[in-house]
Image (cartoon, rainbow over all chains, first blue to last red):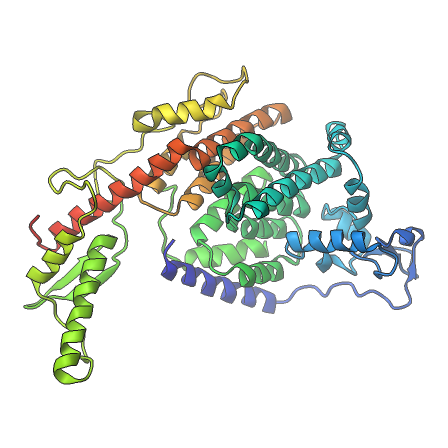
Length: 256
Length: 237
């Protein structure tokens, strides 16, 4: 990719997304100050129940009832996934469920399960358990990457046949599982998860941009803002690569 | 469909080489400069671009020393000096008389599918060493029966052969294979097919053989571009 081309991408990306944002997003549901806390608030990962009886999503509760470890875990998770969770705050829980997102409590509960327990649940058809299993694979690959000092996982594998022998199967299995979720249980969250997985296992950022666009096609109305934020974060990307990745992901998700 | 709109808008507005295109199209011009006596030097390859930029810089410096200011127009470059600089920038092991066949420069270039020709051995060994599955069809172009990776492999050949960014080529390759697998409606079949896509991606992106193959592709592209630029700019070898 040439520098000139990358700059061209960034410019059009920013312009296009700005225009789309300007065209108007439906206002997010605002959380009433009169809302009351539901019974599972003791965990700190809460569903917030409003006076009207339905609940709203809150990624990190009010913070006070979470342990520091839990708070850190959720913060790290939000960072790793480019803020897709925190941006759901205030939406009706039913809407968040429809987008395929696990609740914070489900993330925290899954964190305490062993790999085998997660895998067993996944094999029994628990899609969220499979998603958590995918994320666990990503954490291992990201940990390998950060300890290596390399820029991406393919560099790690190229530099170390030992690491390649040990982790390449994990990379492939993780990618396959993420694809399986997107194909057979398509949702915006499945798209984000697949994009994140593709980026980590392929060593390039652009699948994440593609996945945000696919998540938009699958119903996440935040897609333009998330694309803009991601573009601002990573800078120029190869637009032809983003487009082909986008089309491939749409194929996997069954979007024609 | 807003995300799609965003991506379509940017795609429509950008000129790019598609790794999925089989059309032989010359790469974009990297640099031009006026010639003494009329006409332009034009470079598609980095060796030529470097030579022209070097001569252009030298011409600017000469003008500055003589006139104590930079020229208002790009200085005209001497044919012999530019050709001398281009000859000096000849890529290693590049034979002017028989440049390698690469996409973008050679009308006769054609892709060779999944692991035939010079890439056969390392690709076959790498991909299949990771497979202990009885599902292998025996055909590298379609390792999982009923699903062809041939188009994906050919596009990947074109992408590497054009010296495009390796990581981008490799992910696009995997994406094309994943897309080919998406017709599998049975989860078990789908996962096996995707497993092959992962193995193929691993074979081209992380193995020693693939590193050598990519380096060779880039080297051949540089040579082909240099020979093209030498001829296009009227430089004798």
